[in-house]
Image (cartoon, rainbow, N blue to C red):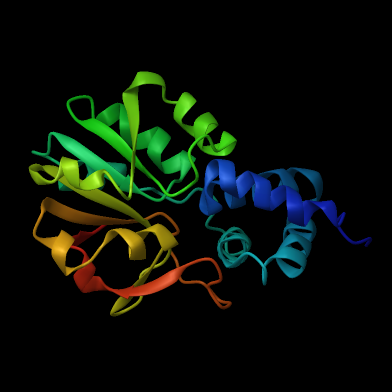
Length: 212
């Protein structure tokens, strides 16, 4: 069997910036499976998995028969009940596309860590129209208060730790903990990673009031 094209590595990186690691991984796995079934999914994992550990985990899930993982949208909606605004740290298109229509009474803010005018970020925001606004690390504290919840996208939950996007480390701290209604972690990967979690960071469960 011939190797997958080298450009696929770069293509996945582009897709991950636009869709999120997990959403891009599930898209690539679906397309690989359509193209060549289990053999191509294994090849995708072998060639790209060490560079992109979320993709590695999604390939492993597919090969184990877990091909349509539940996103626990109902549980996340319940965890955010009562908040009038939600600040989202991290981005996953599949998960947020399913959740945001459920939050019709809340104002949604995506935390931006990109330079102003970044084309990828502008495209992400444009997909949600007026439903979502952007807030950055210099201005998010204007949203502080008992009416605002914080939702962070997680990638696998271990016994005492979770993996978070880099933005979480720049956002969260003891000074921030007391300023918001609640902190909810949403595990969009739903399984552990098998290779070193590049691009992500490990933090304790205690960062969050609830993990879904």
